[in-house]
Image (cartoon, rainbow, N blue to C red; front, side):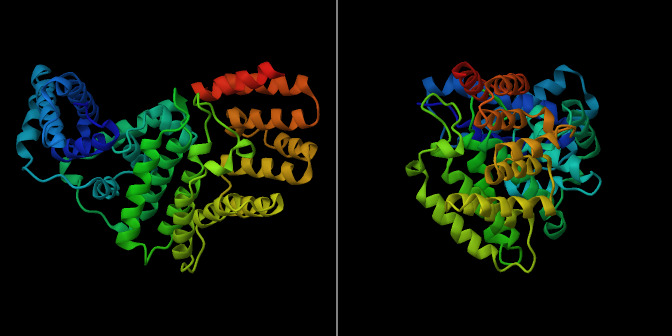
Length: 385
């Protein structure tokens, strides 16, 4: 027998406990959930997997949670627990919208969703939102203290759809390229984001084509996942990928979703990013790729969009032009702190034959990354110099 599937069950267990005990007990819920999985790993291999794995995990986690409250003599918390009526837990997607309560700011909602339902750490979220870890932790604490079990009610899908789509987008991005840890790709996160976006598309995609645009983006990027790492798990640059490894089923799903997205009367950022991803998949010219990057920064000049545009600009107009464009971004408070910025600088310096400058840039990139596969790959490139 095997242990539980953490990624598959974690969100459901957490969602159930948060619904019952309230988000003000977030940290205790996460601890109890973790303890339940540890208990399963210890007992299931010997006793066999239970018929209903999720029910077993929920029951175990709930017992651990109540034990925590009793041991810390939190009478008020226990009163809250007994005051909550037994309710069947909503599915994960429903809880995404329930967290979008107007008593929380949009960013606080995003942070709470990614922490509780996505399972991301405060550091993961901070990197995604380009904030400090301390600021994100404050947002999470503030959100869980404001929300009560009574606040977890149905919220307007129409009003909160942008928040949920952004949360799913960020969740997928962390799966596509993990910001930290020993894995460059976290397939579990990417797959979960796709599944939830597919559910949304089936529910309301006809009236909200931007959902299909996001789904197309996810499928196109997922198609390249098999080629994005070496056998050792190190990242492989796009231009060095074996395109025969690209998943044709994901590509087909991407174009199908993109066709559904074209019914929209307005273009969202997801439409533009899906268009870019489709062009990359179709091996369009660098000029065409740059055109999409330009459209994206005109609509949403995020730090990574600006950086990607500078790289695409250099690929069209030459290494020196790319370096000049990157130099114009070096004082940006976010961009210049990312390993991607210094990697791009090193790449263009290598094209110009300036190994000393490339070496210096690679060293800065190594210092800026907390992803072990990325660090190993950069060290390897530096060594080759």
